[in-house]
Image (cartoon, rainbow, N blue to C red):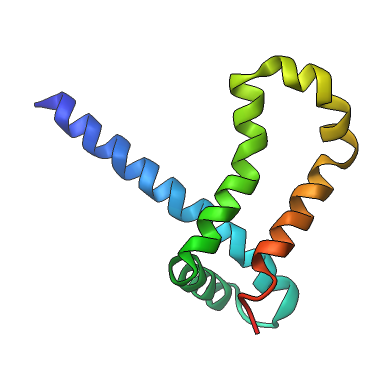
Length: 105
């Protein structure tokens, strides 16, 4: 019985982590564009994360692909590590902007 309870809390934690990171994808866009309270930004980011689910999932792919490459193919990190260190984050932010570009008026 304890294993089922542990599995429930583990799945709950994974879903909560997914929602929190999805909200973080959108909250920084809102903070940079609109003047509002933090609570309003978080509420609007949650609405965007759920309402624009295909874009949110695409953001997960954009930010998750480099992590998956490092975990599953560490030799690629050796070969392309210079790229990630120099302009990798900038490319990820640019791709995030491309995904989020038309989502907020």
